[in-house]
Amino acid sequence: MTLRSYLVSSLMLSLVSVSAMASSVEVLHWWTAGGEAKAADVFRSYWQALGNEWQDSAISGGGGQSAMTVLKSRALSGTPPEAAHLKGSELQEWAGLGFLRNLDEAARLGNWDNVLPEFVQHSVQYKGHYVAVPIGIHRVNWLWVNPKVLKRYHLSPPESWPQLLTIAKRLKQEGITPLAIGDDQWQLSILFEAIVLGEGGSDFYRRAFIRLDQTALQSETMEHQLELFHQLRDYIADDYGDTKWNQATHMLIEGSAAMQLMGDWVKGELTAASVVPGKDILCLPAPGTAGKFSYNLDSFAMFNVQSPSKQQAQLQLVNMIMTSDFQHAFNRVKGSIPVLRNQTLTDFDQCAQNSAQQLQLAIDQQQLVPSMAEGMANSSNVKQAIGDVLVSYFNDPKGNAKQAAHQLARAILSAQR
Ligand code: GAL
Image (cartoon, rainbow, N blue to C red; front, side, top):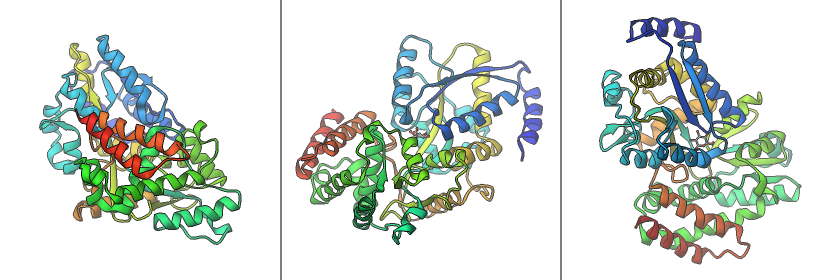
C-alpha cells in the first residue's frame, strides 16, 4: 500500500475514533545521522499525514547515550516526552521505576501475542505486561565490505577472524584502512561481541553475556577472543578517536576503508548516499557468524501522562507503528526489518531479505542471541562495565588479554551488586 492509500484508510479510522482533533506528541529519539534522520522523517510524516502534530526531540549521538541523559533529567523534573525511543534493559529499568504506560489493552486489541515473534514480545514486556511498541529488528552481526577494494588486491571477504586479520595485514600494506570504526564504547562492544559469537559460538556467548558466568568470562576461550580483539588495533585508522559510526561508513563508501563491523543501520546511511546495499557495499555475516543472529530491537515507550487527549494521541501513535504499511515504509529506510510475522519483503533490498531469512533460521536452530552491546542481554550497569573494560584494554598498546579477562569478570561482578 502506498502512503496515499494508507492515509485514506487511516483517515477513515481516525474519523471513527474518539475525536477528529489533531493530536500532538513529543517524540524523543537519537536518529540524527543521515540515514537515521531520513527514517525519522518517515516516522514524522506518517504521523503528520494523520493530521497530527509532531514535536521533535532529536538528541544527537549514535547509540543514544546523550538521549538517555536528557530523558533522565526530563523525567526527574516531571516533564517527560509522551514517547521515547527506549529498548532492551533501559526499557526494563524505566518500567521498573513505574514511568511507563501499560500497553496491554492496545496489545490485546491489536493481537500482538499473535502478530509478533516471541522474542519481540518478551523484549517489549516488563513482568508479562507490554510497556513499549516495537518498531524494527536490526541484525548486529554484519560485516560491510567494499567489494571493489578487495577485488583490486585479489582478496576474498573473510569468513573467519584469523582470515580477516590476514586480509587486513595486506590492505594495510597497500595504504587502505582495513577496518572502519569510531571511538564510541558501544562500537567497540559491537566489534567484541561479534568476535565472541563468531569464535566462541552462541552457547559461549550466552554463558558470557547473558548468564555472566564467571568461569566463562575468565576462560582461555575468552582470553583468546580478547587477544584477537586487541590485534585489530593495528588495522583501524590512527585518528579513529574522532570518528562517528556513520563517518566510518562513509570511509567504506569512498573506499578509503575496506570493511566495517556494524548493525544494519549502516544501510540507512548507504541508501541515503544512493549506494546499493548488497551490491556496491556487501552485507556479509560477521566472520564465523553465518546462521547466527544477534538482535537489536528498536522500540518506543509511552510515558505516563495525565491529559486524556495526550493519552489518546499515544494510543494512536502506537497503533500506527504496528501497521504493516508503516513498518514497511519505515524499516526500508532505517535498514531494519519489520517486527510483524509473515511479511513479504520483496520491496526491500537484498540485505534485508537476507536478514529476514537468517532470523528465521536462527530462531529455528537456537542461534538467536540478544546483542550485549545494544543493551538487549543484561542490565545497563553490566553493559557499561563491559564497555569500560573493553575501551581501556583496546586503547592500551600493552593491553594483556589475561588481565583483561580478570578485569571483565570482576567489573561484571561488581555491576551486578
Ligand atoms: C542503536 C539503535 C539503532 C541505531 C544505532 C546508531 O542503539 O538501536 O536504531 O540507530 O543505535 O545510532
